[in-house]
Image 1: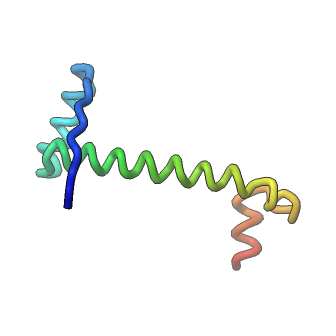
Image 2: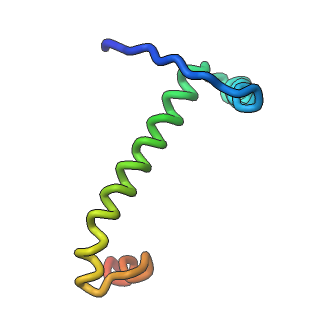
Length: 73
């Protein structure tokens, strides 16, 4: 698998937190940053999809998560 290198700048507090997580989990900086980026991008895609679907849901009377749960159960 081909990979790309990305350089980022961290303020001292964020670097300290990253290193703490690495020590606690036994993961490398790269592993922690990749997972954090993967989660953030997935969340962004989910939120974008949700924004696109909201008008269709509201047209069906679905306004809240509870409405969705009610329909699904």
